[in-house]
Amino acid sequence: MSLLAWIVLGLIAGFIGSKIVNNTGQGLAVDILLGVVGAVVGGFLFNQFGEPGVSGVNLYSLLVAVVGAVIVLWLYHIVMGRRRVV
Image (cartoon, rainbow, N blue to C red; front, side, top):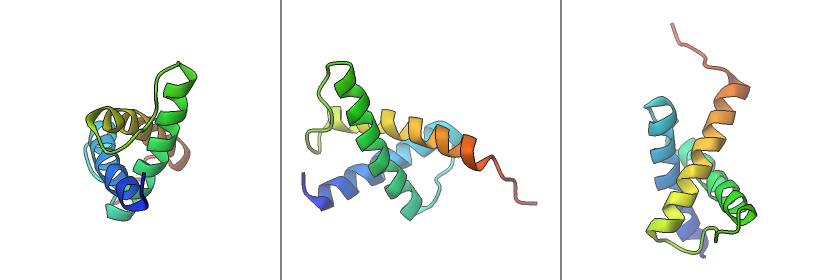
């Protein structure tokens, strides 16, 4: 997969994952970063269970990336804490 495809898939997966986890986006750069990391994590986890990981820009790869992004975002919120701006 090309770098541009990873960025596009990461952006979409990060955005969907952040909507699932906390109902708001983290910002464009953080959504992309966490989405790409989530795609890698999701691909690794799916491979561990005998399923193919991210294979291109398609619906299955998006599902894998979103699952990974949700896991990464969940861990991100645990580590960073839920900071409230007053």
